[in-house]
Length: 362
Image (cartoon, rainbow, N blue to C red; front, top):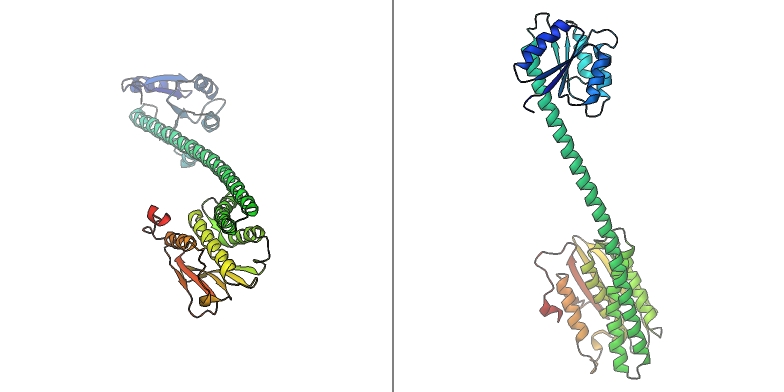
């Protein structure tokens, strides 16, 4: 509240207005008088009024009509309704219309001390409301700015994922071309394996670019696209009987990459070693079992009877082990399966302590 708050007293009783002016001036108010509603509204329009004391019965506009027009003024000063009437209905109507307080006046001016208190309280409450409204406006503005920044960030993330996905796809295509042009079978196999690993990562970024949720990947759609990439990458029909049975499970992008790389390694391993005499069925399954995810890659091939290929470097097995550790899982062979079936079980939510360290990634 300022050192001398300005009070506008709107009342056609000039003698009572002088009593109010003398009484409130002694208590630090600067008091102005308007004899009717129209002149009071004109003074309010000029600004500089902190609080209004408004009488009900006046010629022309009465107090309630004047109050209604005051409330229509933007950032209007608070109004203390003052009348000689004992009718409580007027008080209720005035308060409902927006008056800050209501006082019954007398002709001797004995209500002036009460008016002083009511005016001071009304000014303080108006300042509090104004501060609250400003704070709420700032919160809304901050929230709007945050929403705009979040939207811009999402667009940028989508664009980044799009560019990364495209770049990785180009790399995979170059590896595919190089593999096809190489006369050395060992080099072809190595380049094809590298291409599959790159494609597994590229697919995740493509999923994120087209998804509404940048924090998760739908595994069934991701694996279907990944296996289709693998089918197209093989020149022969060795993956013609590759099939997928997967539930719609959402998971974070980092673990989706690990799952994709594991599937790529184990499928390629089955293609190379399970069926020496030609293509055979390869089954990829993904399901929820309790609070865990179960991933299995199975074939009906030679199984444990397969001879170790002397050209094998064991790189695929090391990659599978590293990715399994990232998932907080272990790759285990199903001893009851006639061919080869590798099963991984891992929690739907990753343990905070399960991290892929540089040693395991090497």
